[in-house]
Each structure stands twice: as structure tokens, then as C-alpha cells.
Image (cartoon, rainbow, N blue to C red; front, side, top):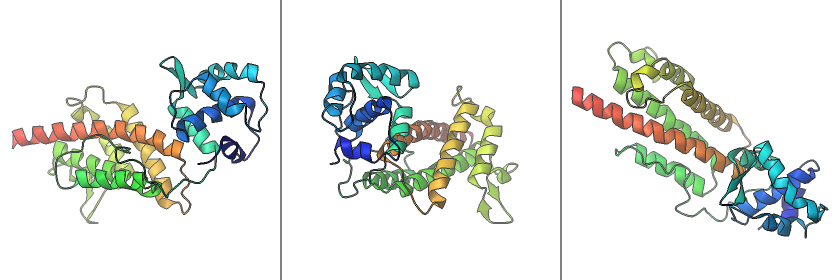
Length: 259
């Protein structure tokens, strides 16, 4: 297990005092698995380290980090926000320990998939990759999950008579690119609002943002997602999967009633 000094030493440039305290919070959460954590725990990490910060001033930094959007209050203590996990996860450069898999209940996607022969197996592959720290595969398979769900939603809700090319290219014998699928889904949001009245452009933007990040991993030779980054992405993936699974279920029920 790396020490706090190892963590700070992995930062390419000298961190500010504020970031040293932020890194102490990241260390407590990600390395020590302590969250939420108290100010005294931050002090216990920082004071013995090689980074000199006035011990009397350490307690002032968590509030500053909250103002920056990196810390939040939780149960009268402190924890990192999603932005904080991403910020400090990108800052450090420690190698991921691939020798010890995550616990079986530590899932990238915990939302329940549709009960068929395809989606449960795919979600299981995603979570297996995540447990074994194969984060490029985690992202690529999650992209595949979302892409297939959008294809299914367009096919089931719009039908194939007049809307086949919304998701399929007949003369090429292949499905539309994921970017095109998202755009076509966006143009038909009103068709899906009976199943989810709050469905709007922000959901489409979140889906497209995840597609872009997954594409970067698919096309990159060097994959360097940190533990903090992948866990923050897990929150986004779960939120997207939950709504897409619900839309899929409702669209299938509607189609079955009409058939």
C-alpha cells in the first residue's frame, strides 16, 4: 500500500497547501478506504508527512475545498465530491494494483439489466473487468451496452417500417455509428417522455459525454484511468444505465401490448 508521501511524490508539480490537504482526503478515501473522514484524520495524515503545513491551519482548508467543489459535508464530516475524485485522481500518477481484485460487490454498474440472454451477461462482463482493474475494457463494454440499448429503444419505439435508417444502414448492412444513434435518439425524445417525463437534452449530453470518454479509451494505446476517475465514471454510468434500462422495459411492455 502506498504511503501518503508516495501519493504526493507522484504529483508532477509541487502541490499547493490546499491540494496537499485535498490529497490527504483522497488518500483517506481511496487508499485507506476511510470516508467520510474528520479533520483530525486529515491532520493525522499530513502532519507526519514530509510536506510542511502549519498544523493550526489545516482545519481551514476543507472549507476552501468545499468552495472549490472538491469536498462536501457528509454526516458532520468530510468526503470528496465526484469532481474532487476526478481532480485528484488525475493529479496523482500511482500505478493501479492489479494483483488484488475488487470485492465481488464492488460493481461498476449495479443497476439491474433487462432479463434476457444479452444484457445480464454484458453487465457481468463489465463488472468483471472493473473488479480486475481492466478499465479500458470496462469503458469499451459500457459503451457497447449503451449503444445497444439506444438501438433497441429506437427499433422498439419507432419501428422498422418508416424509421429503419434511424438506427440501421441497410445498404451497408450495419448499425448507425453511436454518435448518429445519440443524435437520432435526441430528435425523438418526445416519443420516450411518456416513460420518463424528465427526459431532456441534459440526459443526451451526459450520454454523449460518456461516449466520448469511452471512445478515447477505445482508441488510445495507453490507458491511464486512475481509481478515482473510474469510480467517478461509475456514478455516471450507473445513472445512465438505470434510466436506459427503465426506458427499455417500458418500451418493450408498450410494444407487447400493441402487438
